[in-house]
Length: 327
Image (tube, rainbow, N blue to C red; front, side, top):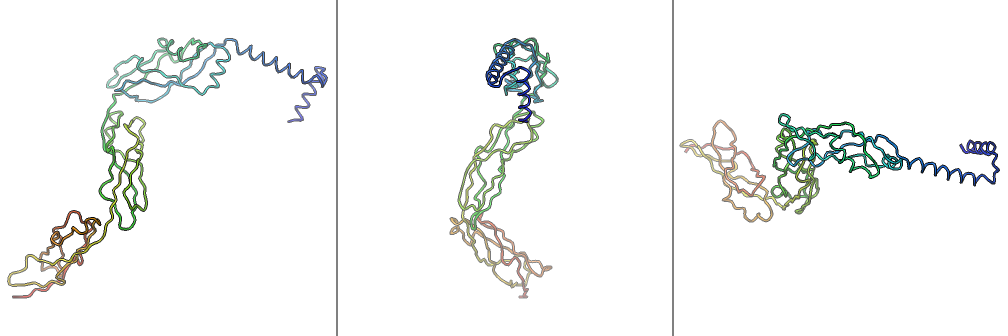
C-alpha cells in the first residue's frame, strides 16, 4: 500500500513538474483550497429529504395505545449543507408528536385519533433547527387507535427459595409492603391476571430475621403498566425445638361385659414448637382417642385435640394392639 502511494506521488511530481522541495508547500496549498471548497459547498442551501421516527407523546390520561408503533416521517427540507450534514451525524432520529393535538373520532368502542401533516407544519418546524425550512411532509396522515385504560388492584405474591440453618424456620408469612399493585392496560388483558409475582427471593442458611427490597417480575405484555416496580419484604425467623409428652390412652365402643387391655397403654406425642413457647406446652392441651373395631387387629390412635402453636405432631406408636377380656 505504501509503495503504491509513493508511486502515485512520484507520478504527480512528474506530471505537475514540481520539485521535491516544493512538495510540502504544494500539499499545504492543495489542502487549504480543498478546505475552502468544502466550506463553500456546505454553506450553500440544498433541498433534501430527511427521515425521522414518530414518537407519540401526551396521550390522554384515560387512554392507551393499542398498537405501539413508530411510523416513519419523511421531511423535505431546505437547509445549508452544514445543517444537513449535522442531521445525518446526529443520534436524534425521533420526533415527538403530541396526541393531545390529534383530531379524535369515535370508532366502535375505541377512539381513532388522526394527525394531518398540513395542519402540523408549524409544530414540526419548531422541532427542527432554526436554519432548516420544512417544505413538505409524508405521510400526510397518521392514524392512532386508542383504547380505554382499565385499572385493577391485584395482590403481590413473593416467589422464594429459602433454606434455614438447623433448628431455625420461617415464622409466619413473608410481609410485603405494599402487598398490592395497580396494573393498567386494555381491559381484556388486565382481567386475565388475578395476582402478580416478584422475582425469586433466594437466601441460604438463614438463622435470623431479615428484610430488603425485591423487583416485580415483569409480565410478557407490553400493553400493561405497573404502579410500582419493587416492594419491601420482611422475613421473620424463629428458633424451634422438639418436645415430647406421654399421654394415657382412652377407648370408645368397647363391647358390653368386656374390658380391654391395650399394648402399649400410653402414646408418645412428639412435636415441634418455637423455643420461646416451649414451656407453655402442657399435657391437657392434647387429647387422644381410640375407637374399638373388632375387625381390626391393631387400632389406630387419633389425636382429637392439640395446641394451635404446636406443629409437626407425630404419634408413637400410631396403632396399638389389644386383648378383650370377658368380665
